Amino acid sequence: MGYRIAVVGATGNVGREMLNILAERQFPVDEIAVLASRRSIGTEISFGERTLKTTDLDTFDFTGWDMALFAVGSEATKKYAPLAAKSGCVVIDNSSLYRYDPDVPLIVPEVNADAIMGYSKKNIIANPNCSTAQMVVALKPLHDRARIKRVVVSTYQSVSGGGKDAIDELWNQTKGIYVPGQEVAPKVFTKQIAFNVIPHIDIFLDDGSTKEEWKMVAETKKIIDKSIKVTATCVRVPVFVGHSEAINIEFEEFIDEDEVRDILREAPGIMVIDKREDGGYVSPTECVGDYATFISRIRQDSTIDNGINLWCVSDNLRKGAALNAVQIAEVLGTRVLKKG
Image (cartoon, rainbow, N blue to C red; front, side, top):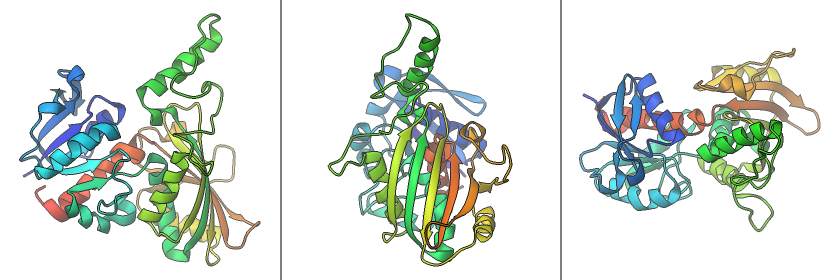
């Protein structure tokens, strides 16, 4: 016996990826609904070997459905997620709307799966920000061993984190550079993204940080340990898919780089590729389509006591969004609903 699943925002990048991953992982689905805004009604969407047509989110009745995977913005989520939750359908939300709500668990299954039981307060579970998700997968097993005091992270985030329009802007600007008279001015981004990097994701806050940077701080504390100090610099780079992060970790006690390597090799969801030679590391183009969070460049930081540096790469549309949501659904099904 399987589940009745609704995917909300099925025509977007993340919604389509959710459907791909549900099929790839053979999630026990008895019935599936693909929902979108009225302007996208009837759009054909692939689900495994099947082709589905989207139906209208605005008129959809969530009564009797087990789970709804939301891949729409915060405004639409604010309107429709409470309706789904009230009808008895558990919402797994990919937007930022509920991440910081104390009554909504923020889940990365490899890190804090037990916290999923808190879903019952609002019938909603939150998916973390893409840059946070891959980082905490790497941090948690190390925190369990030596307790993390402080994290300094610089991100190199692909344009797909900004949606389809952001992908199109990089593509069109890149073409325009080579074709005189076809230059494309920035619209999605504040500056040219082609052949450039932009140290600005989301809005600026009063302290000079951006909201993306604040998210990494707040979410790491909620998911792992509120005592961990985090400082982040988030940068958009001209890569289509795949987020990269340079992470510096300060521990409460000494931990050797070889032990870090061994711990991460055994940790769920992580693949260590760390050879000190040309190409002995993973770049974002190599992680696309993969489930794993890849760790490379593990080394001691001699400038501080108990410091480690590492390089972390993951497909942001997968572990940073769709895969994590499906993994939450798997945990919810196994531990709570128990139908599959």
